[in-house]
Length: 479
Image 1 (cartoon, rainbow, N blue to C red):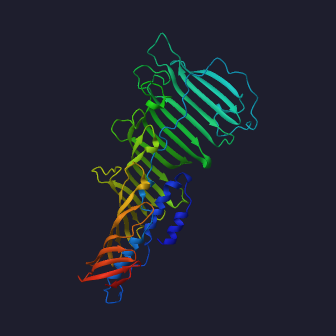
Image 2 (cartoon, rainbow, N blue to C red):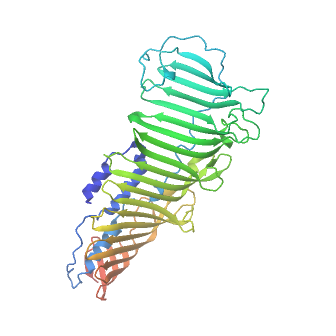
């Protein structure tokens, strides 16, 4: 892949939802600037410099000057989409005594949309309340309230079982609240359904009940995308869902579709072993976020999968931060870009105030001369969780593997003389690089990076030791 192709790829339009999230991912792709470049020729460097010295110098200079954005930690999610975004549950069963005075029909709503079920027929009166028996055996009653105002059509349906004093243990209360909102542009709508999940109603549950409810909210967005959020909630000690502070989120998933194509799947999973994704009565929760994104044929990406473990603060989501992260992106040309964060702990998690590794690995298509190109950054995290802009870069390492006949691999390690702030690039420090040959043998360099280049000792594939200075382009001179 040539640099011009990479530039074109980075300019390709993406879904607006992911633009900010992917911006730094494309910046990281600049690391592959050497793709498709003509292999360094083993030519005499002049001044009695062996043929195998300057190829190592050029690769080392390129790795040193690859100053693409190194702070991948700031691209990680700080919060979870669809964490607790629901339509409010009504506090009581709708009044079923009457529908009120009929209002004149709304202008511009006479045309019936194929998108609307019969319940949303705009030809009905503007304000109606209909009560009907749904199940005579269970004694279930449904109250349907339809209103039209300012070209917005709303239908609310509440299914409930009246209290039966002769059978106090029988199910009663609100079993389901559902509805749909359609706008002047009837291709856009919002539908929701709250269903009792344990048979005792969820507005007036029995004492000792966990009071479970299933939530299903769908949005029809511009462009035809439908976003559906499905969650299971348990009410808190007060058994009241409307008081979020002590509720518990037991499961959560978001799915976005376009026609028959699934664009995105986002899941929240329990990660601390209590079978609760989010307990809003606790200060913090440990949550696994799993995202799968698929892109249309015209996009430069095929798919992206993200896995992150988050510390979630119930009272202040701005403090959320990740302690594990992995992202895999498949590009249109078949190449794969992987990014991962790893700490020194046994479970690979990283904590504020500690050193952690950020690794980006690019696997080009099978026909490319490079098998893989990996960059690893040793980063000192700030003492405040999630304050990634305050990260400090300590070390950089590069690892390349080749398919070509001449070279087998190249490695480069740079230990910065002083920690480097986000947005900057290390200028001076200790350097070590190795170029290995498929036929056997290697050329090594160890020395110091200075403003004008790198100086130190080269050991050639023949075993000769030379004092060498490489300029910023990798050209070598004897010292």
